[in-house]
Amino acid sequence: MMIEKSKIEKIVNEFIKGKDIFLVSVKVSSSNRIMVFIDTMKGIIIDECVALHRHIEKNLYPDTEDYELQISSPGIDMPFGVIEQYYKNEGKQVEVVDNEGSRFTGCLKNVTIGGFELETELKIKGKAKERKDISFNFDQVKSTKELFSIK
Image (cartoon, rainbow, N blue to C red; front, side):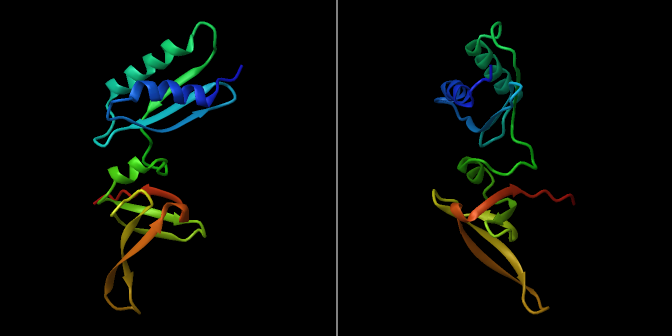
């Protein structure tokens, strides 16, 4: 029997209530492989993942259901799933893909409930780069993820 995603979300939300932890996403495969992604503004620590793992196991009756459970923070290549990730990454370099498939890179800033701004550098007719802020509403954005540069 497949475990319902909404049941896992409910259990996770009970656990994180009143804590600094936020739920990014829950994925449940047809073979009952459950992946829960959580984070905090400071970054998640292993103890928090372990505590949530135990909480879910306790509430899922492991003796009656066959499943695999994995708790982690979202990977660096994973697009942002919730607004808290935008707040957490404010001031960092990100890549934004809009609904038309255009890519923009720049510094994430001024995150609000409705959207954000991206400070980018544009080349003006082969001359020096010019800084420009581009505003995005969340409904215009297909994906946003943090950019990492190795210096």
